[in-house]
Image (cartoon, rainbow, N blue to C red; front, side, top):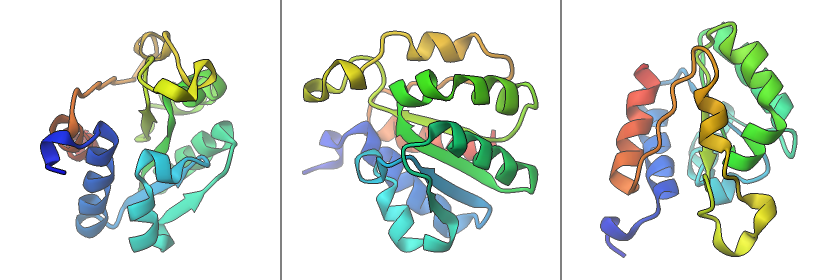
Length: 156
């Protein structure tokens, strides 16, 4: 498979590996979808900087907020529908109001999930995030843009 055919989430996973190598402040938190979001490579290579929170998106955002307050650059990885739907209060109140350096990565945004069905799809995920103060929303279209966007987000 050429990189032109790789999924956007592969761009995320590859960028995390680069960041793990180049920036020890980068940490990754999973919400029981580590393989699917492609954060698993980072978890395998840098286990001391990876935390599997489980199906607890709200907790993942609070842990990420705490990590950012001590100088880490946390990436929270899950499906977009779960992070925007389940953890909105933590994102709004803890991360955005405090303007914390937390990277929220919602894989399978919109209705791009296919066979996983309606519970894993959202029509409102991007719209919700765009209304929040101190929130920057990036929606890359392919592997290459995703990789570049993740690398950029680390410095933003």
